[in-house]
Length: 150
Length: 150
Image 1 (cartoon, rainbow over the protein chains, first blue to last red):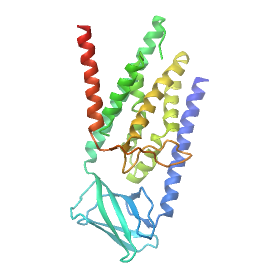
Image 2 (image 1 turned 135 degrees about the vertical axis):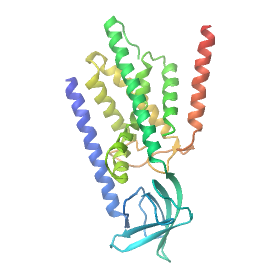
Image 3 (image 1 turned 45 degrees about the vertical axis):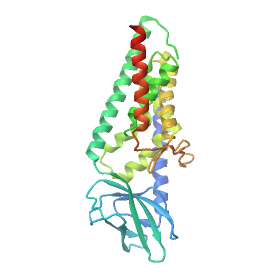
Image 4 (image 1 turned 60 degrees about the horizontal axis):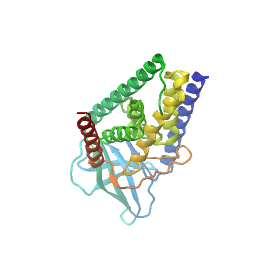
């Protein structure tokens, strides 16, 4: 019974992950642009509306090259002239219907991906340490015949 | 990610306030929603990683992870107890994250039913203020206990 609950939890988790992935893919297919190596965290429209874009690497002196839904190459001009060489960059961009261009501004930059991974790895180790400590603590408690308090 | 120190501190303070004996399980639970960071070590594109990481900050996925860990690792007698502590920690994590202003990611409490984000937008997600305040509170608590004991 215990194993069955665990397996059902894992299956449920996998189903939700698959659902989320398909949901994002669906949103992406409805987006007005298809970014190359990029991800839409928000959906823009052709009006003067704001979109959020996460771009994986900007190497063109502050410009982002991408293709629209018709496969036509376009470029995103950034307000900032900084050359972002690598890493994930979150942009807040506005579609200008009159000039048919996207104008963007860098909101947040994940420049140091290696540091991010190191911090994540350390967090995982902390989780495992506390989880192991809790597991051992309960095992010892049961062995001694004590009772846990919630 | 700078906030996982804040999550641990909040879990510690809440566990002490509730007089939980096995506080390490609350601390482990308070890192469950950030386990999605493991995905960063997989050979996936950034946009796929983000799509898969989004549901980790939901009640359903946190409960499924806590349920899977509790049922597959802990013995039958400790299952409910371990689950409740892990889930308490995860709930604290989601509650604290819901206070943050996220430009990307954030808490999607009802996923997979709805992927709408919930945020009180009190602090920017990159802010170190919650981590510093909560860490200071933990330090004050530990100092108080030490002086009281002495």
